[in-house]
Amino acid sequence: MSTVKSLMGRSHKSWTSGKPMYGKSKVGKVMKEFGKGKLHSGSKKGPVVSSQKQAIAIALNSAQKGKK
Image (cartoon, rainbow, N blue to C red; front, side, top):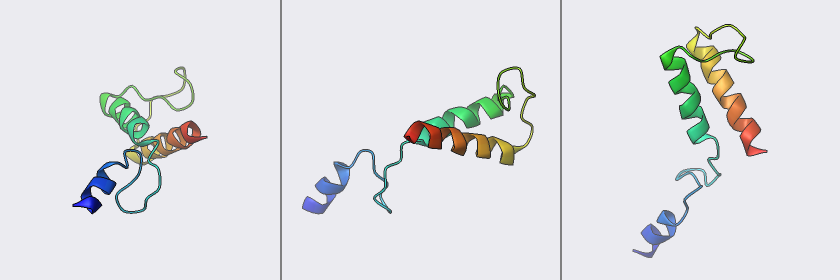
């Protein structure tokens, strides 16, 4: 029972690796933008992203920037 309590207390950590998961919500937001067709590469003036791979790359990059 004590193991379950200790695992539940780790709010910002992954269950498997023990590393913080800071960008999880940011990745979700960016992928929602991609799904709606409103994700732009670069600034809002840039072209709309059409490739899912490019959207994932943008999401992971923005999550990494938020971590620093």
